[in-house]
Image 1: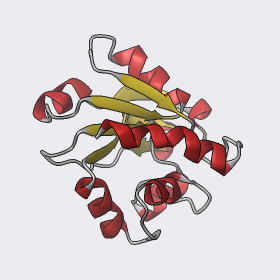
Image 2: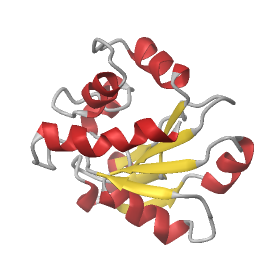
Image 3: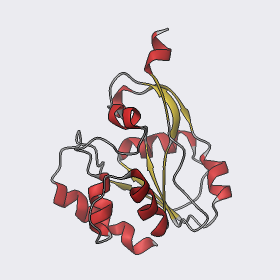
Length: 164
């Protein structure tokens, strides 16, 4: 019964037919699950980075965040569909199952590059999707657990601007 209590599920993807790049995380953390929103932890820098890169004022409204991604041809999802985890740390993931990224990419053929939000997302992608032949790049994790300077994270994330 403990496994059921620790099972978490990925959210539906944010995507439409004009999406050109895909940003993949691993799985939602506890605060994101609680709010049912991507990167909801206030110390996660994902949204701050995206809005800064696009020259926009940061919004906490999930619908505005969704629209910003889609307007800028960015899709967002997770590598994993479900897992057992008692914390928000990717290192605590157990009994994972991947999302069907092969089907997803066939449904959205305009996606020409995948960016991973951290090394763990890339590791799970390589574990389950060795056959997917699309350019990939690992970005520094936006998680507050990955404690590097925000400006360094922002600098590395700037590379997504040249791909769409």
